[in-house]
Image 1: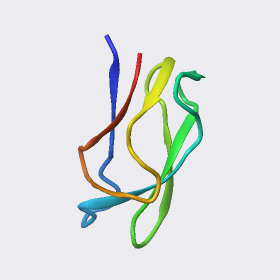
Image 2: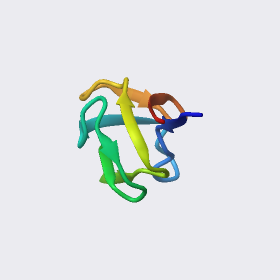
Image 3: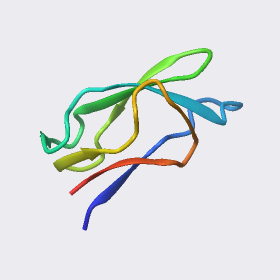
Length: 76
């Protein structure tokens, strides 16, 4: 079963996060711990790691703001 890639909570007050950049394209293989995307708030930029290994399928668009918890792709 595919694991959902969600927008994490970054900081106490951030409710929206901008998906800055995907590090892998659709269909590429990722390992657990690989940096798969960067996310930005008004105060910081954070690298987000894969929580599992598999084939990545990003659905979120770079430069778009998402709410904490939104699904932006899968790893299966």
